[in-house]
Picture 1: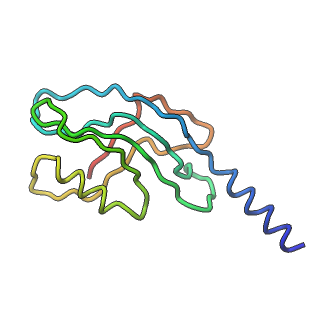
Picture 2: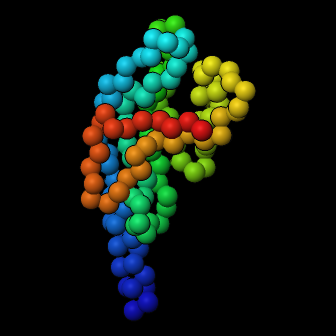
Amino acid sequence: MKKLLFLIFITTSLTSCSCQKAITEINQKLDSKTTKEIVLVKLINDSRCPENVQCVWAGEVSFEVAAYDNGKVVAQKQLTLSPTNQDEIMAWFTKYLPETKTPLKSITVIPYPKEGVSVKAEDYFLKLD
């Protein structure tokens, strides 16, 4: 009986975390005022646990970014952001962003998922702190 209850609990927990699997193209324009910038090209997968939902794992978000220097693409990469690889992702961003006095502390894909709410492609953006 305990095994059956445990199996039901695990199954329910796994199915309660909704996953957005569709590749979402983003039409972001370059800022002509800066020489170096990073543009979010597309959202590949967002399996982050929605707000106010109990999930077995926190999930991750996969996306494609392009680094520009003077309006030309110098690098384009697919990245997967999860709680365990922030440092690796920040190293890639730091390599292509203009040098600043304050170091990059975090990268977040916004908006964070909410249960039952779909997000338009143009509403996604990268938040760099």
